[in-house]
Length: 399
Image (cartoon, rainbow, N blue to C red; front, side, top):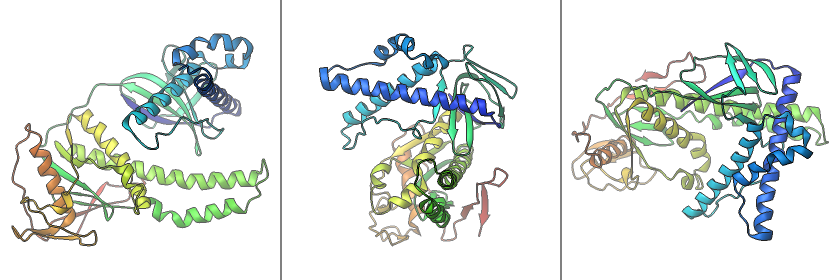
């Protein structure tokens, strides 16, 4: 399954009103379904399922006629979304997480999408025109070619406009084998370091935008808090657009880098990090900014689609171990590795990446374990150029 996201071009006011109406009704149904589940359990110790709530939708429509303005499967999908939220909550409880996160009611700005779950006449795409049941025709900007059979269509509201997301079912696109293997060490000084000596720069998008964020936040604070203040709404939108730009920069960077790695290597070894736990420590801001989890998710599904191998290894001690197996204790401030057992000397992150690859090869018999080249102090360093523009190259060599 793949997702393709396109922007809706200048939707008319009538269409936008219908979009907003759909979101409001779906959100109201979601909140009502949540209230029903909570009340049934508190009062009668009864668990209500998705099927129970979906079965009473026709009856609800008899006295809530405005629900008839929304395609029936969109309403069913809102209830299904609530059911998925509860299932995810119970899964977290079963794992023993301290903060499982009980499902919450959605405010007006916390419900931003609705979905047509089946392409059976409720929506169709003809060129740049998208026809939506009970909404009408909208024009979209087809920035790329969709490959596969379209399954679902989601309309999403963002600060920069309205978007449509198509989910398609497609065949895997297997890439040509290169015979190369690589270990990856995630870091903060550098975004990541590869076992061949490649170091990829950490651009720190949030940190770079903090000055602008502070200016926008002060602008919001100065505006009147009275209900319906137009100047405050405009200031909030400008503030949110800065955050959206940071998000897009991270996604663009992660997509381009993960694609490059999948094309170049047959086997990629990464550490199985507890990112959630690490993000609660003293380096929480830096770890949130580097967005490892988002990158690893993209690398995982792209490797699967390309027929490449991605192996997660135990991260314990990778930075305190030499490639010869000896333990070399280092503080976080010590950035250079020097082994007294074998004499190997290199940057600590490069050594960690080599150890990660060794562990992956050791636990996977499908691949031969090859001796790692110790290299030299002058091992190559690569810097990733800015990935904001799609025309910019991904990798540029630096001395």
